[in-house]
Image 1 (tube, rainbow, N blue to C red):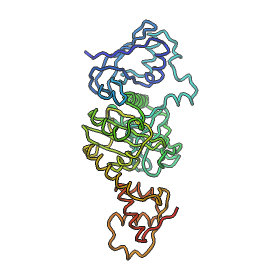
Image 2: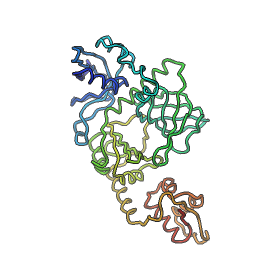
Image 3: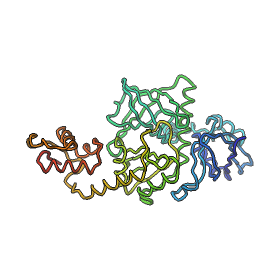
Image 4: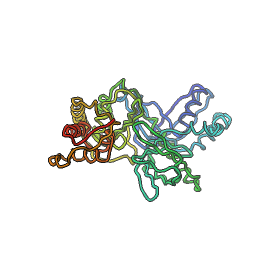
Length: 400
């Protein structure tokens, strides 16, 4: 016996909105206070009261929001992925509702509109293989024809062939697709995504696996909470979610488009990142953000970084302490775009500390202040202190 879930549609317009937004993409969110297990199979009824019919199918639970997350803007319920393919669902819906097949066929749209309709953020771990090199990355969205991949470092050149090993967000298995880089997409904070166009799969099973992956990624996103950073504040968000859910993924996006991600597990911080910056340093930077949006999901999909868990309270105290230190420093003359250079006699620097030596090395390369801050793992306050000390000693000079 399977547990029962029911969702009701009182008008054709209401059902069509849900079909176009979610059902056609393989998932649905159903408000409920009942408890379910991850990957539990449920019987699902769509009560189409406007036509006097009930559409029954089965689905798998991929995410659950509890009532304890209501203060953060959540609605108690579960996100499910249909076990039937979109094509199978569409065919049976035509039989049950008496609707015309073209009413439920998004392919009637022009290719540009169809792609915009189908493309959706996926946020799933991906390994990119190109020219014998392997890069750990993340698919930001996946469509029928391609994917947008966020990877740290220099982007793969346009025209290069790639193989993507995309981690299925429900099963953890790898879905392998091949394609080529067709363009680069600049993002805030200096990051560059790569747009990959898929080759037409020869194997129908491979195409089916890709469709299932896209459906699973969409279903996971349905079980999330979104809101304004300004309304709740980063410190509140970093305390609320780890204490309210056993595990979760929090994505923060500034008004300028810079993105940070945090993974929580059992009240601990498992991973934090802003581009290539990770750990408590990334948390300290996020704490400075005042505007933007957040998106929380009470789960961690397979393939995410599995670093050592650290108590969130400890990370917060450390990050806040470093923020206070940074506030005491005069960095007005050291904007991120300012370029560094060496000066003076290296013999005068025999008593340098290790961090000062690392800063001097980057100055020798002519790095900017921003490149220096992003490249070294120490907190920004520590790097600024070392840089200011070298400038006072005449070892480093700054030009705008």
